[in-house]
Length: 191
Image (cartoon, rainbow, N blue to C red; front, side, top):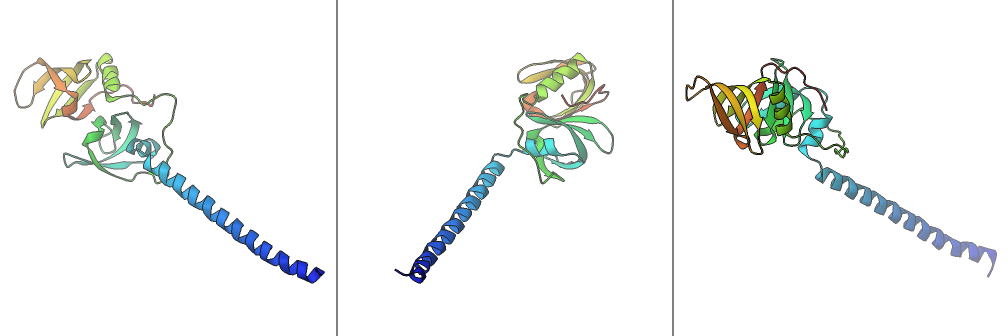
């Protein structure tokens, strides 16, 4: 074989190598897209709420639309600072029907310390004797939280809207809570 014939044989090998490299790059890009889609599928609403830095509009199941800042994304609720009034509210996640203004970039929460629960914040408020307004089952009751159990809280209520009780201890199912507003919250901080 002459030198020209060897060069002609190298040309198909070069073409094959280029095709193989292009196929490999396509495979890598496809794998990267698959990993990105998988990570997005694992995203939870709480991850996006944790990443929010500015006001978010919450569209609640009861029909309210509220602009608020996320003070803390809890395991089962959101601790909010309402923009208009400056009040602090806890809203269970199941009461949030929709959100506007969430960040488009976020990281999945994988911290060593798991997020607190709504019950943990309520126990803190109970210890600090924070006065609250509890919206539950289309009622509103005011008072201080006496204790927080596994599935309910006890409220030293100053009145039950539809019952007219002067003062009593009221047991409220945590599942029935629509929101809890703190009248006098000494500190709202990320823990």
